[in-house]
Image (cartoon, rainbow, N blue to C red; front, side):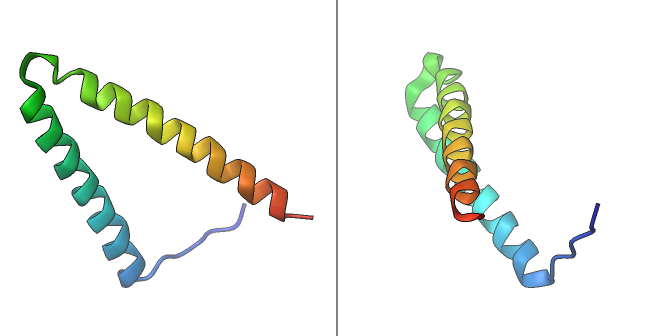
Length: 63
């Protein structure tokens, strides 16, 4: 298994995207009040679907 190193800018981008996404989810959850537990559940489902779709597209490109 090969080790992949990321540089500082890539780490910054990953952290920025994570924090931005978390902030958006928390803001939506705050407006939902007692049904706030649904927001992370739907976000997890959406993230899994998006990940599967991205991996599918990557597999299609590899000969």
